[in-house]
Image (tube, rainbow, N blue to C red; front, side, top):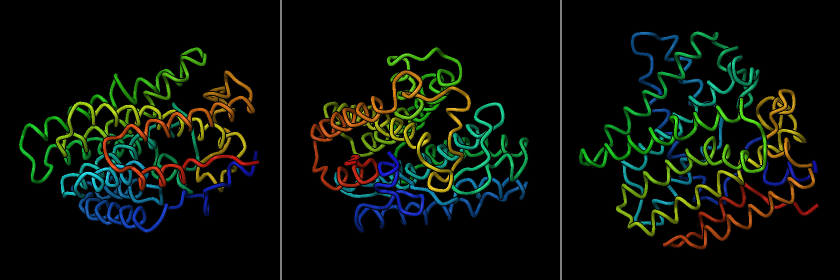
Length: 305
């Protein structure tokens, strides 16, 4: 099983599938750096905590997927780039909150001390709130968009992270009884909802029709399930160094996702089934998805051992 964890992992971080993905991720990093440079505001220490969370080394997976989707549908606009940055900023906020003592009580995130350990709990909470606000500020000011388009992007994000999305998934993860059905629901909400928000915003910005948008939504759902299954397996058989975060926390709190309701070997088999379903969802997209597929399956590798 240890071989499974190492496939597609380079120094703890997921590699890019070719220069296209690498270039797009660098574009995201540059935009995030520019945005974070203005975080100091009236409270420099708060701004520093926000910047450290956003700019810590990471995959920028969600944003890169958004930009790759946009490129396959005509190109990356300034609006898409800012929307992708907003998704990454909100994702960073969710990690701060997920790591808090009241949640996972994690000590390590992206290879660095968790925000609440580095900055204190009170500042970590404020940084998380401020980053969510920053995400919505970006979406409400998307360049080259009319008011209706901006409002749609804000609504999509609110639905993706609130009581109908990520927060609901976290609540189920923390407190709900575990069954295969409930774990799948958790995955759809906790992980899939933010993927879905990113894809839905791109679809809105590019004026995709109902069929094209529905295909992207189906992809997001499958992507969330595969990504979370992979993360569950890595939590059990990986290491803190390779993961960039604490290893085994889910096991410690008896919240092991799929592994709470199935054996490790069965979970691995299920992961591969989900991965095949993901391939089918990619084939339903209404555009040339070869680059997107290559990138996703580099991030979520098959186990040959």
